[in-house]
Amino acid sequence: MALPYFAVAELAATMRQARELQADPAFDLANYRDRYASLVTRSDQELGVLARHLGQVTLSDVLPGTDREAAAIQADLTARLATLPRRDYLSARQIVARHRDPGDDFDLAEFDFFHAPGGHAPMISFRDDPWLGELLHVLRENEVLVSLICHAPVILTSTRSRIDEHGNPYRLDANPFAGTTVSTVPKAAERAAEDYGYLHVPDQQTRLTYYIDEALEAAGIHNLHKPNPASVEVYYEPSVKVVSTNGPQGVDALADEIDKLLTGMTAAHR
Image (cartoon, rainbow, N blue to C red; front, side):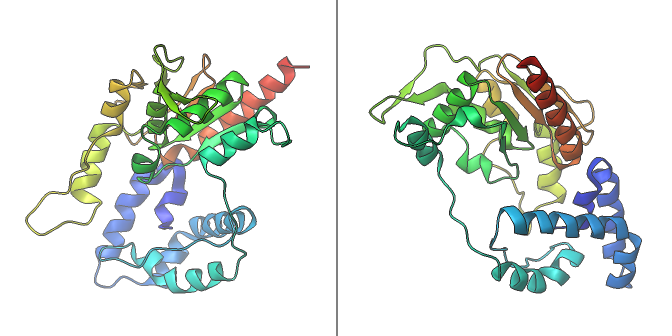
């Protein structure tokens, strides 16, 4: 919820500036919010989208080093989100089961596009999951556009496996997603975040257990080379209809690309 993330393409520069302001002993929250009034407005808009589409979600506690503006609104935002209806969400396994059920009118082929969110959670939940692999292959077979942002491209490691008609996972001899290029977080960007953006045990280094681009390369998926990891890089792989961007700074560019691709696909099917 830190305001610099709503600067999108200007994320890196705004983040540096915000850190300097918040490190000042004379930091004033009201002045800070006035300075970034346009980002406050966008934050409120995004929270409105969250309320409409996601409902009740749980926020983590404020931790040492949490963005000071985000920490200041955490309690009020937690109370606000607690009033929203709680919604249930299908797992990949349930989605596949419903798609396969002839008595269920749920059909993945009717989706305009599929989007997988970023953040570090996908590094745990999206890697080498056969049910996610099956879901992605079904989407590909039905020519559904797949959108991936930030760390989400690690989901493509799951495409090395599928699920048979009995619910058993099996490894593919030939993966149609192999050779795909995506735009995701490079190791260099992660190392910078590890050194400056994460909590640290005193006198020790914070390190991830693996890096997205290395895990993807091991699975035959290539990361788009980016001279500047903070730049906005959107890449579309037409062979498997996967569009991706390397981080939150690319969210608007990704949305524009999705709109353009869907418009083109609609026109092509007329």
